[in-house]
Length: 163
Image (cartoon, rainbow, N blue to C red):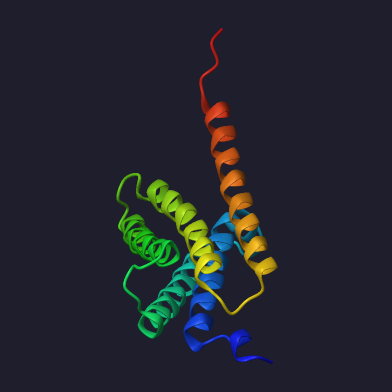
């Protein structure tokens, strides 16, 4: 194994944060199915908070071990993802405090956070094969287009019908 193919601890922290962020998002996307199975919304919410907190911890470890000034597009995307994650965290906290429309903003920012994180990872990591980056960027595009399609579908079906 060559030195160029070894991931640093900072890389691993970043991928752990990304995985946990995606897991927290998937948990919320599947919450209605999970609620039918568990019948315990408090457990689902607590799991989301714990997973998101772990993601934040790994994100902090990632940043502290790989801090760079914003010198490239990839690093700038990473800092954009951090800003989106902090705002998503604040809007999630606001939802727990029952602030109006905070859940909507939390969902939107989470939808921005994951693609930004994937683009950051794809454009800054030099320790992985190019085909993996292409898969990550294709996955990012798929997530963005699927999310946009879902919002368009919801908007079209929530409009009042004229008679």
